[in-house]
Image (cartoon, rainbow, N blue to C red):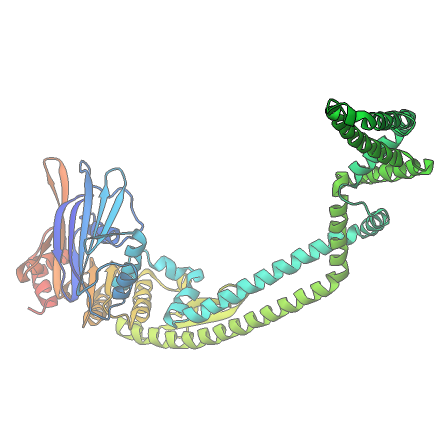
Length: 549
């Protein structure tokens, strides 16, 4: 329950502190006195998105504080716990709006986000503004209203999940069909290209290896003769034989040279070893330089074939092997495509069947909820002087979507024998207000600890009808709390607590204040609402009658 509201520097409010009570709280005053500002301020501290220019002109910042009583089992306690905020039997919300537009909020003296405020507000306050009937008039919102009444969130979430699965399966099938169509369009090319690549079977690193081999063979004839001469010179008839003879001659006389030949012999022996290594290298080179003339032709043919295929497919020669693998993968996908498409179609059928079942269950639940809502609204219409009106929730087949397959519309017949039709075509302004009140009452039943606020819910009605609306508001306030902004004297007279909102101009500055009214002041205020600026004895007498004084 809302206990108090403290407002500082918000629009035309300088400083204002209000203490609200259980039951029906009534706010009255002339049009433009600032009643809507109170609601804007309350909405601001609750995190609602509204007017941006709330700070009073000339002030550095505006501030609103609201106090609520919380039971231990109040839904707000869980939100506080999940947000890591302190709970308890009192909830204090404070929010500041600076002149440059920055907003800061606190919950029980702890900083919090606007998201947390809005989550708390849903458990604390139900506001019904002057233009809430726009939502009532728009059939697009009727399905949501019905779902809220029937507590169909779980089933609707299940339907939404099933619809998402259908969308995902449809997308997967469409993507696969598009891919398959593309692959089929190039099937001939793929099979020819794969056969060509398989026949050649190029390997990574093969092209530079063939190129080097080709160059070697092309230059072999020119260098072979010189290499052979070098081999001959180094052989037994050349350097090797001469060094061998020198070693033999020196070795025969070294024992008589008293060691003077040892160093020379060692050097010659090392030279023989190096010479042998050189000769072996030349022999190996000669082996490589000797080739079959047709080998050059074969090497060039394969080298040119690899390069030609690389140019054809616009890839590097070393990438031909990977390119061939990619083409084989596409062909494999093509060959397996029919089976994959068949599986995807089966998957789509399965999720579609699941969605259809869930949507059908949601339709059944909505039909049941519609019957209960119709009965509940009809019960509420009777005390609102609309006992002959007929309220009916129509459910028709709609295009399938995340919210199911139902189109929901509220219809009314306001007079006996009259045909039913949409609210905006059949109901007058006063009738709309009462339909709205009846619906709101039905939708908020069972929400404990909720403060209900009605902003001119009684517009367009008067006399006995206004009295009936007021009495329904009183019954709503029994055991709870209702705040009403009203211009109806019948409604104002039924309030358990009454405040007058008035505007004052002092030294060119306009301010709005709220004055609690005692019994005498209430008589004058209700007389004003009945008579206007000039309060007559008759108006006071009528006001006392309304107040049962």
